[in-house]
Image 1 (cartoon, rainbow over the protein chains, first blue to last red):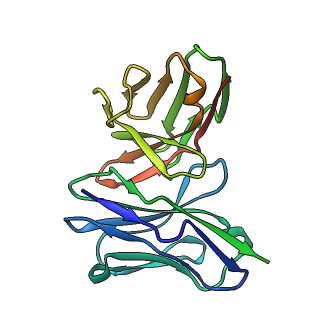
Image 2: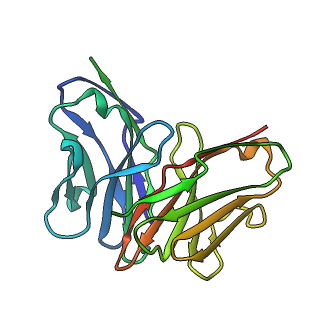
Length: 114
Length: 116
């Protein structure tokens, strides 16, 4: 069975500071990993994904994440936070056996302070 | 590309009535659609998975007679909440998976259901 753990349900950073949102997963087979962002009363928007190949993946809005198999992690980073980054972020995992079925983490609410 | 729409975006209904939510893939054929429920400040809870032309597979604890899912075409799935009660009030989100990239899902904007 797959699982996703997002450390920190709330993260607060200052505008211009580094954003680091943590995600650890468990999967018995090679995972596919995703980060989604959700703004209030909206659906989920894909930020980036890892399936195969390069372990450092770049996404939209300046976000990137690195797949570290040895640490079973897929942390999301952005060098400089912007006010518009304030939102809920979800890490998710699937794999070839689960098809497109996603297992989500509990989410991290990012607050950006001026 | 890969746009998924939901209708309505918000709906208020009276207790005991039924409400239908539509999920459409606008520019691709969705072989699989998923329905999620999201409580305030919580993660998404998968309710069911539907494949075009076949019965939906419901997650444990989800009442299939209450949450009727139909996936009659490759671009449309519907969720009908039957005999709605206030505890059914929630944010419902659909997503669609397509073709060879079945590991990807494209999410709709969600439907806010309020049962009074």
